Amino acid sequence: PLDPPPPLGERQALEAARERYRALAERGGFPALPFDGQIGEGARGAAVTALRARLAAEGYEAGLSDSAVFDAELAEALGQFQERHGLE
Image (cartoon, rainbow, N blue to C red):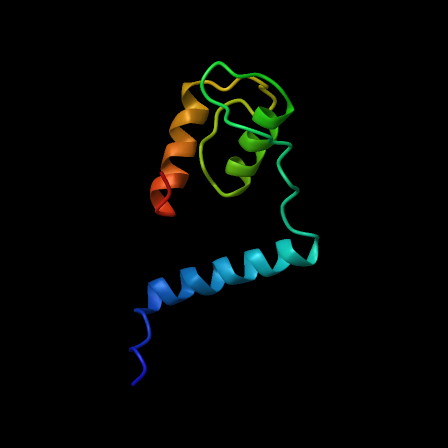
């Protein structure tokens, strides 16, 4: 048997997210992050800037958009993303 549909508010949010991701996919999706290892607080560079932009595009408060320094705000945003998606 099929599960019942989600409540109206949740269904509208899911439909809006689906449309947002469909439009993103039509534009080529998210660019790959220039990442080749672990980064953490204090790291600097293009990978940090790209990570910050990606999290901001997903709606996370990732701090200064042009900062190439992995700071506490970026760490918090990344932690929220990981928690939301069941990542460690």
